[in-house]
Image (cartoon, rainbow, N blue to C red; front, side, top):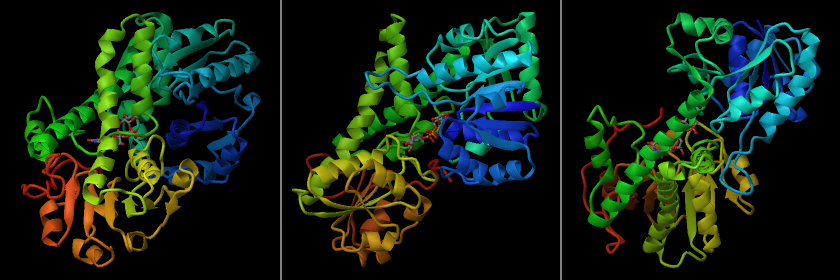
Length: 464
Ligand code: UDX
């Protein structure tokens, strides 16, 4: 089959390479000619395990190419829409301009197919109602119709999540009609290998499919903010949030995943998606239904502020103090710094006058673009040299495995804030460190020592 993917940002690029991997002839289109040229040359424009490999394999096999010209994709059987839906500059809602412009450009070239069936398949995360509006833009094009097939991929696992998803969700304009059945059969043919591998496939109306995606993200964000709210209670009482998470997670109905307390969620999806969901509920006149998501957002923001408060509890005035931050990416195995909690903490420390050195295995270039004046040091040990306080803010494997005895000899003063609850406080204290972990131990009035707690929980789910 001939497949196009319009918008080869994170989602679209991975989808295009994955469709080539499934054996289709794929053309990726983007208005960004630099990005198109990079990918045509086999260079991944972002860090994602396994992506460059399938990109190069698709290019070498002649099954994958990239263009900026809509005329070159006019003959495809299926067009996936992988465009971004950023937060609007004037509020919480999603900016749908890129999607609308892409569908308009596509509608202009599709008549070249002379009415042959063409399926446009939306993958972006959108407010309910978007698919139906975009479909209306295609009504004048004979043979063209639209489906909505939301994407659930996680950064760091994007290739695996695309080629072996938990489920496929198909949104159609009118379920259980012959037209819908024909579209479902066509998309099944695109995903034939996944269907054969018995990936569950659910067919539903447009609005339901759109809501599945935003509900999934809202639930995940809520789970993280829930445990981070409990972390606030732990800090006020001397409790240990990692033990709370472990114990409640053993209840199957709750489940232990996504209960890692720390500096909270960031990235290109969860923060903006919950805000867009709130805005969409308000537009629909049911804003109260999602009022709790404002609290989810507020808890998440408070954690970033709390880290800086703990730094003040440990150092007093931060002006002129030497602080090293481990991690800039919004999560490990990613070079993405969009809405990164780590970078927000860095900015706050810098505003307070601290001399901050940031290290990260992949995200330093992106971090420097985002935070003017940021001092980056790629080598962990050099970054640690002379620090009066160290903050672990992104739980890269190499930081989780740091040897407290060795590191103590590098820093000026052995003080650590573990913003991700990945270090064993007992081991670090035994090695002479003053360590504070978010949601564990020391109450607010007792700022400089951690109440002894059980050892860290290596069995808590942590990404590989
Ligand atoms: C998320 C969703 O998981 C994915 O299904 C959707 O398609 C896109 O948004 P992603 O943004 O790649 O994926 O990251 P994810 O692994 O979900 O982590 C999001 C944030 O939550 C990260 O900042 C992470 O550090 C944080 N997090 C995650 C926690 O703070 N605690 C947890 O227990 C889990």
